[in-house]
Length: 358
Ligand SMILES: C[S@@+](CC[C@H](N)C(=O)[O-])C[C@H]1O[C@@H](n2cnc3c(N)ncnc32)[C@H](O)[C@@H]1O
Image 1 (cartoon, rainbow, N blue to C red):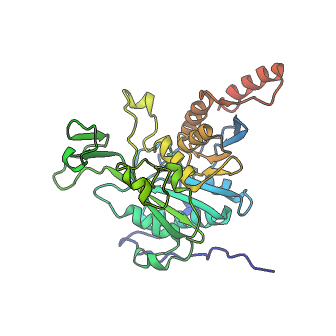
Image 2 (cartoon, helix red, strand yellow):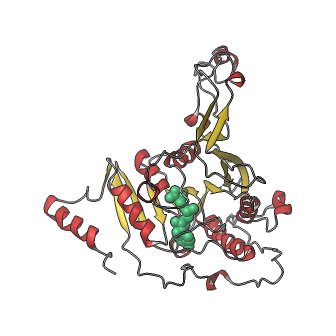
Image 3 (cartoon, protein in one colour):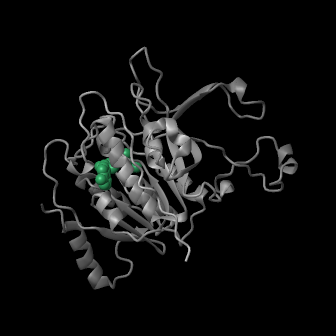
């Protein structure tokens, strides 16, 4: 019998700042503002086309443990970055060593549930005053234990890196002659910084981790047309007028008028970012996509659009409710497709009211 390769239980060799104590992540409060965890809301299942989308108001550590080994095809996720983001419950500023140990234990579970040919798209950004966070988080998830030993990581292989570009300035003269561009342009949004020390941060990383480093992708699923059509005949993919988009993905946030109404979560990625990860992996309607840090559900919405089965966990009730509402109001998603009409009415009533009373 061939023994399946399992992830090594990577020990983190973390140098903690002087004075900080190494604590077990289990003792960590998820309710950073001193509140007790609230009673979880009921999980829900929705349907988009034939795909079932399941979301749970649950700590993903518990959720991951309940899943079968090698049951997930694609994970698209963004953990808290530990940079002091003002989440409603989660404490996003703990000692760095504690944060990385938490991620290490999370990655151990993620390794267990991911299929051998699966992909983990791990989105992390830094802040100008702390730009190492993404590298440290990535090294930890890969199982390097130490950034300096990333190339010897014992868990995931670093198959591709993507850059999520939130804003970009393009000079017309650099674009070439085949362009409709009238002038230089600067497009997209970012949080402006006042300090003269730093440059505005307009990008985040998406680390593409796999178990083998050798998972075939569907590059042309996100292909773009050649600018110079003479290349169509010259290259191997001739006849298609389609080339790989590359790893810099310009995905601006939608313009919003009121943050609290239009984007009521402090750290989201665009739905299209999740869609692109899912497409480039080559996922199909038999795949299962997961986001263990659901937030307000961008990956769930991408799966709803693509009609691909989905599973997500979110620890915070408020964000879970927003995610549920975003999914519910999507055109092609229904709560109750399987049910006869009289039962549907009762079902919708229960769904809307159940679990919200505490
Ligand atoms: C960076 S945000 C994800 C945002 C998401 N990608 C989106 O676009 O809406 C991280 C989320 O993880 C949630 N979270 C933190 N710890 C968690 C845990 N142990 N289990 C599940 N969710 C958790 C936080 O409440 C937060 O909403």
